[in-house]
Amino acid sequence: MIMFRPPSRTDMAELAANMRAIDVLECRAMSGHSPLEALEYSVEGSSWSLAAEVDGEVMAIFGVAATDMLSGDGAPWLLGAQGIERCARLMLIYTRHYLRRMQEEYDMLANAVHVENKAAIRYLKWCGFEFGAHFTRNGETFAHFSWVRRDQARKAA
Image (cartoon, rainbow, N blue to C red; front, side):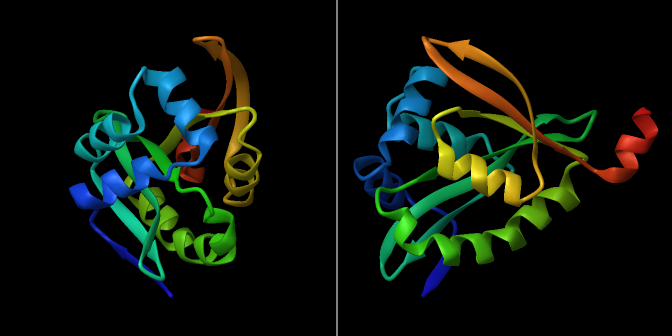
């Protein structure tokens, strides 16, 4: 069974102690933060965030942060626990609802993912994100990904 709720400090500490190695690498390379610092910073800076608990264990914390209030852009993010692949199907099915919520609130969603984070890249492609240029930060390679509301894409054209 999967349950979504606002993340607590305990949830953040639990996930930080059990975070996937690729997510730890992303935290350190992108911001220089430890897993706990990255979670605290992300939750605090988000419009909203949720903890995904599966059978009593926090498997992920995710959310969206406004990046530009004038343009209506947001940055979706998700940090996952070791073993999240055991509940990948549940996460795929149930997080789509929250992705739609993000898409209703923001005209564009964009962020970056480590190029070796294959599971996240597959998930993002499945969700309809498009991938752009690669860049290097602190010796690690990341790929930009984005989604633009269709009516906004027409306005820009």
